[in-house]
Length: 189
Image 1 (spheres, rainbow, N blue to C red):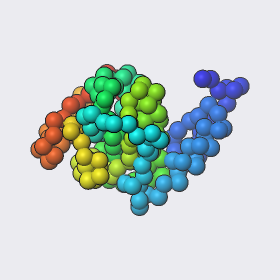
Image 2: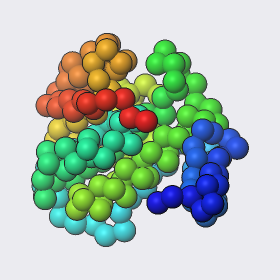
Image 3: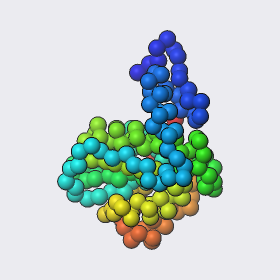
Image 4: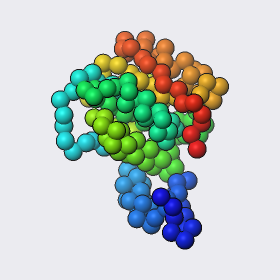
């Protein structure tokens, strides 16, 4: 979908750009109204509940813009699986635990649109934005959305902070669940 007359609508509070004023308005209303003090409880759930098979907790952030990766998640989950997406509100600096006017709305935007794309692919999915520390975000999600398996979606090796700190092993040790790593072929734009 191209922009009308070449106009690009840029959010004044974060880096996201939109092709229509309506998309920018929706983003501003939904993504920037979340209170950073309560963002762990910000959920986007489907309207219709379906019976579930295996429950997958998918941990991802930057890779959520990669449609090929979402297709791979669909293939892994299958028609009867359920996805609970956890999006740690990570900053550009992997060592930072700050959540600001940019990281929280960006994580929320990615989560909402990834869930919409997963729904379009026929995947039963819901999600939440979590704290920047992925282990803490998964621990919080496990309290109210217990999973049978964890899927970690990462950037390519060499780029991924999560792979550098061996997050897959840490997740397996802490939660005792199988951990599947799905790596993006390239860094999403």
